[in-house]
Amino acid sequence: MSASDYKATNQASKKGFGFYATILALILSLAAGVYFVLIRGTFGLDSTHNGDCYDPLITYLLFGGAAVSLVLILLKKYGLSSAVTSIAPGVAICLFVHKCYWYVVDVFVGIDEKHGFDPRFIIFVALVCLAFVVGEVAIYGRKQKKVKA
Image 1 (tube, rainbow, N blue to C red):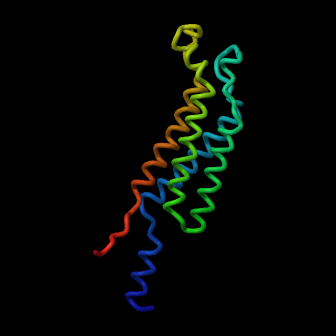
Image 2: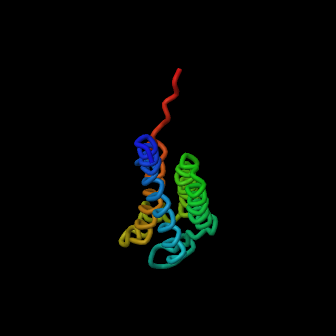
Image 3: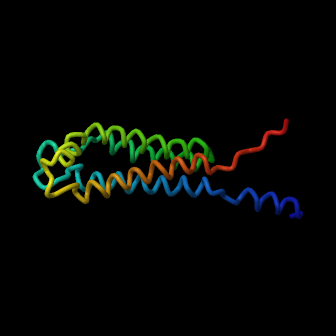
């Protein structure tokens, strides 16, 4: 093996910051999906209709986005993979906001004032928002190929 072959092999095996950010976003998306399934999207002490924020589509987006991203990583389509790790949690956040609107309003208006936000709600929102933000970082953290003019 010549020195130039070794250098080319060594550079090809190095992964950039965007790759590892994509992997982290994938893991966070899976963690958010598992947590959402475990708590069944129910927040608050009384388990009323306003505290039931479960929507299977949110779960499908989080798990499906992670699975598609993993397949794209295996196919070495890192740019698409980082986009999927950002888009899937982003859409899941939008659906979650739509689904749990009344729970948030109850807490802010004071109907559930003495209890405040359920810690399960805060943990899920933190996980899914972290997955989205890290996915965005993965998109912009990728090394861009320089085009010669």
